[in-house]
Amino acid sequence: MNAELPPVIAIDGPSGSGKGTVASRAAQALGWNLLDSGALYRILAHVAQQAGVSADEPARLEELARGLRVAFMRTPTGAEQILLDDRDVTAVVRSEQSGKRASELAVIPQVRQGLVGVQRGFRRAPGLVADGRDMGTVIFSDAGLKIFLTASVEERAQRRYKQLKQKGLNATLPTLFSDLIARDERDRNRSVSPLKPAPDAVVLDTTGMPVEAVVDQVLDRARRRYGEAAAGRRQGG
Image 1: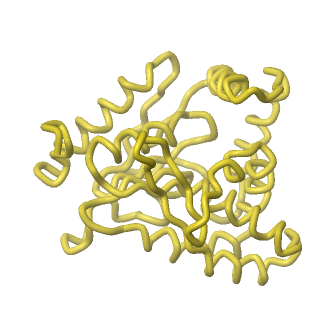
Image 2: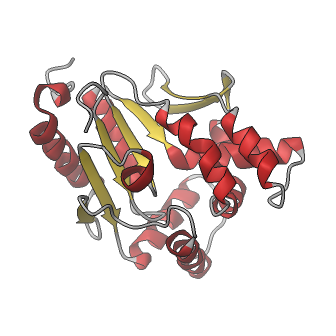
């Protein structure tokens, strides 16, 4: 790790493993910046659709990716907010449609290359918590702490089912189960940045674990690894 660069906690894992929630809560506890890399692919899917750019136009997709201006903020109530060119796109990004198209775009090498610089641009003081599928293997391969979260497909489908129901959206467990298996297959077998733990990653199986317990494990490891830099807001700071 380059001592001159802000510290990074890279959290990777398959869809539904809890990495987004864990990363968000860890970043909030530490007072660090957050990168939800999956949201970038969803935003790109939205931008491409608005611009009429299809998946068989990789050069144009790469150009769109390089030009994304995205920020992850928190409202006064503590809710996450995703801004694109200072415009709130949170609801659009979290839609199922954006998620499915993003998964299709993520296998395109030019798309991934176009987003590399955008993602690394989030590495700012005092530190960064980055979640995705290749944070520890590609984007921040020098991260001082790498976590790979996993969970059974059954549990991940149940989690997704509950999330969708809470949003008032229709969903069936068999469909979600099949979708997760298909997405895992795409992520693990793509030619560029396949989903896998970094050799030096800590692998945590979150099956049956409450999210608070997972966050506590991540924060404990962060404080052991980064010391005072990861003291965070335990004292209200």
